[in-house]
Length: 548
Image (cartoon, rainbow, N blue to C red; front, top):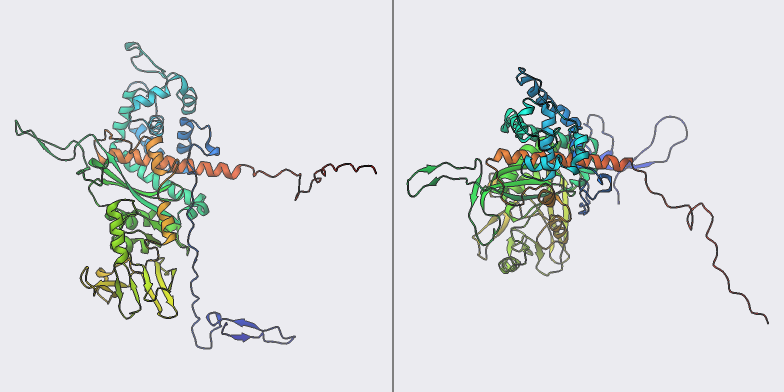
């Protein structure tokens, strides 16, 4: 039943019918300040989606695109003209003008490096073999390498392949002029600019895909070592051959993820598009890196495009289950979906999950309700029901609540970020209570989170993290040749450059696919049969009647 008063129009004429006005919309009285309207927010939880990623080769809009055409798509974006082209033009101006004019411009040589990365090979020599071969004729024409170039000292060496394709030495000199640090920084800036460009052009699609964001880490191992070595015979100390990397010893649980190298932490949409990424030493904590990304790159690049009242979820594994990470996720406007206990079908994980199921945590001043080790809510009689609730503050911070109601045991409301644990671990007096002022560091952000261990919706979000077909991590391995096996990276900056090159290609191809999909005509049903404006189908033949 709505409570309110009616307002009738003043003045002569027939009186208009009275309308009911809710208390929040009533006009202010004389001397009163106008009341603020309550902010509305979405209550529907996002549905996990599955399907091909927009930059996949299987997309019909991108079918038949050669590697050279994919390079041209990236180099034809406005972001490229704003970020990379001025830098490459400056490199051409700084080149020495003595002697003959250079055969290739810096932008042409940069297209060779992009071709190598999209081909998924580790060296330019392999990429040149593809580009200069018989099957690379179309790519040479697209990139402008289908004509011979004038070279200094042409008669001094024997040409054994296509003369229009830059040699290994020419591309190597271009990389030296560019500089490794500047090269990686330029592609990182291009990546952030492409994300903003993607949101501006296809905001509805990309914002909808970002309602569920997946966080994960992937190792990138190197053949080189990250610590000093001592020659036992001579006592000579050798410097590390890997700069910016780390070392992780081999254990029973990290088979294939141990050694010298890096760890790539990335936030990816449901469609496999990276929104933020950072490369760290392999032994650095993933949760600490992800929290730093949310407070830096995410807030600067992605957050301005997600200022809405929709329910959004960030899903990650147990490695990110820390209070600081959960607090950062809430402040970013998302609800964390993470459990300290693994869902893996292993004996140790199953025993740990069973122990959490049997554990009980008291709720102070709510004796009829309790929590188990997974922080799942239940009442004494076992007939209570739980409800998920999410709202957002005016600052955009997400507020998650777990509500319980029962006819016998009453009701309880737990808000994430308001509760702390008390008592010793394993004791019967252990429970939760509301945190007081000054106890912000003791808050347990798991209490009140509705996406618990056995929740069906939480299970859907967790299962959607694993990519299928040509997903994000699958594309990095099988298509772009990254994260596949040990690489010959000598520094973190070198690996960062290759990763950001791939991320830029992903967003440029995704934009091209969506642009082409919008231009393609929508297939229509033929104008025959039932429900159409055409003639109805002919009736079936009737059997002949027998003569008497």
